[in-house]
Image (cartoon, rainbow, N blue to C red; front, side, top):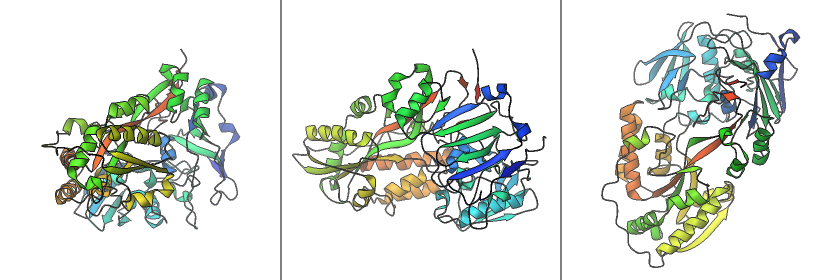
Length: 501
């Protein structure tokens, strides 16, 4: 294995948020051929927290293949080896993870049990905690040089899945400052070394020839942060970017079809109905609303067919959901609304939702409801939605949280004690189904239990799924094997490359 490149740090590296950088020896600069193989990446969101992996910035580090976790998830949400090669549950509270040997961080440090303990302990002590650890108490101890023991306060069958979260990436001990700061520059273990981040405008990565796995085919990555969607799409048309995140629907027609790739997202546009008070406290009127909605019209006209009509809460981003879904038995019969007045609300932060509200208002009016609309910024409407001040609320909702499992979302939104229960739904059978699913280890039995819970939720008509969203990823025709990941954890991988034809 080659010796990892030496890295020199600028003063103030650990405390700087606006300018983080590291530099390689002059002799390591690439040739003209290397420059031609680099991947130019245009990203939607600039760093919000100085690229600390303990924030949502962690997903950028993961998409750049610079910071790695102990495990990774496959398409079915099953845990696969990464920096850990094997794991076992020792008892209800303890898990043992065996570490991959001969892994070097980008600064030359060796991956050891203590370095893993250091990274995971920093995450448990962070304020705020990474969201994957919300409500989770765990202790991490080294067992020899090549294994760790994780002990949880409560039994948790999803510990391997939790450790796949990019917010629990393992970095070199040098990444962690005394005042709680964390820098991933030159301290990851992936196939690319993060060498420079210039504020919120750009970043640069180089191939890491000391990588433990398959060597990257590209010599590096040049990242630009471009929040404006029109500008991102233009960078693909003008050949100043090779891969572009989140192309707006309005820009798709300006690109070549071969440059456009749609990725099903674990995000469902859902109409939540207030089951506690108002018109929709009556099951028959919830059924009337369910019967009135024309999903295809919304997909065709608002999303210009760049979305999938919803048959349930969980969409095509979870490849197992459709095959396990069963029809709702004896759905509630609807009665004519006869002019029942409802308030339909949504927020303006997501550009499509106010237009979705217009179509839904038309459809519900045609069914016999009298509809009033309320649209505000999310920060000014969330509290009222949670307090039950609206009869119906349109929400674009992520159905997978960081563990890659939908139980947490379903519990939050549809259990009696759920913290995000906009529908104010409380049904003992649903709670029991969710508790059953939560206790089952990851695998087919858990997936079946999840779908049984979804069936009961759909039968309540408390939430009417409308569509599943897609993200449009732009790729130059010369690019091969860019990742198209519904979870948005991967983008440039060791296999991603430029080709000439």
